[in-house]
Image 1 (cartoon, rainbow, N blue to C red):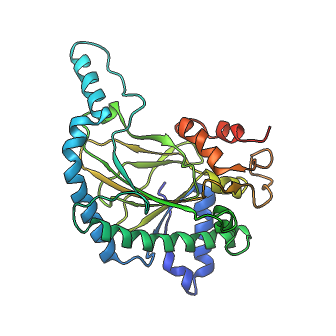
Image 2: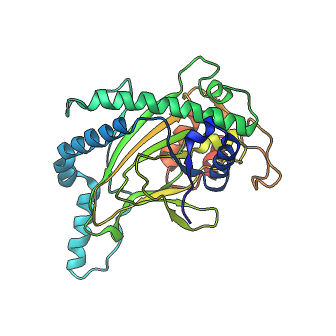
Image 3: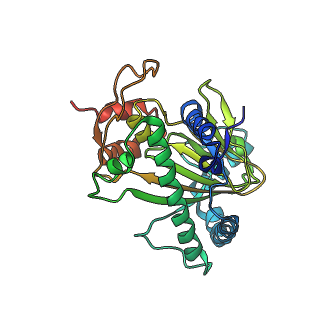
Length: 311
């Protein structure tokens, strides 16, 4: 079954009600969907593709020469050649990655990288805030309520960071994960993924993995654990993973609109009768949750919620 693809421009016309219903279904049924016609210029998206690809070319030698997953896979393949049973690389991902944040140093090569990515991040942040407004409308929350919670009543800025990843061709993709299955810790995630090379999958409510199909210049949306809590289980964070592939170098640019670490996260609406949560989620500091998450990212999320529950 295909992940929903939604025309975001319909929110501003006569088809607003239908578009809202599609977005609500995407949040509730998948936790993942794709937006097209977001208002971000295609020309800018094409420049983003180019500068990120050019940046990876400068990093490719380092990935092949020093990435721990590359070394671990080579060692396992060598042992296999010696007659030992093949086994999978554990605890590592076939991923080249670096992060962008306003307070961190940025790559200076290619020369247009910072200018292009700052422009992109500005446009994407506008989209994130508009989508949070849509979410508030769908959940029956006051306008600006999610941002108010994320900023601890305006005392802090919500965290907004970007992760630039590439998943290079892998000679033995069955022996290593591109990115291990996990849910995202934070709020709203906006992904500009490769429009030719696939590999991203989401775990459906039916327990089966589904491909997040490449769609040219679409923005993939998914919700993190904090939205699951605020929605009291209505918008559950979805498990997702990236498969390593033998062919193609998959580009992935994920931006995270998260609470400030000092923010207090709690359910903002009553639990639905059919939520299956057995009651409300706990109230906790996002910083405390992150301390648990960084140790348990690739494990079940329910123990993470339990770990921050008031004693």
